[in-house]
Length: 190
Image (tube, rainbow, N blue to C red):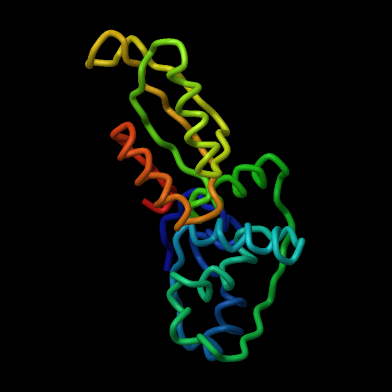
């Protein structure tokens, strides 16, 4: 059966048709097939880099993606001994950097936040101090003045920030909403 393919982190698995020999070998050995999201694959690859110091391409990491929390097999296999083949390190270094960023974003450790602040001296500094006090690193910041529809003395900041995880991100968002009415938080998994 031919199926359409699309770009994916697991490009080694994205084939339009399973080969005849592969199908004959595998057909009686497969009990179940599950799908994982791109963000789950990115988290699995990130976990392997961070915890195991292993660079595994997307197709080799999908098994781990399936059993990590949030994966389709997590509850079924929780508490059981599981062996996962981890294979394939054929990944370009620039792609690996993007995978790490996507994994961090899916993990709640990297987020994009829009905040409207005072455009007077000290406005950005006040936000930076608040973020420092919250234990956040600012990775990127962009000032947008021309398209702000509020008062002329306001500026919209688009910030990419690093947190320690999902709980930390939620507390950061809460503080930013309280102080500035943060407008938008984007995570990869959304």
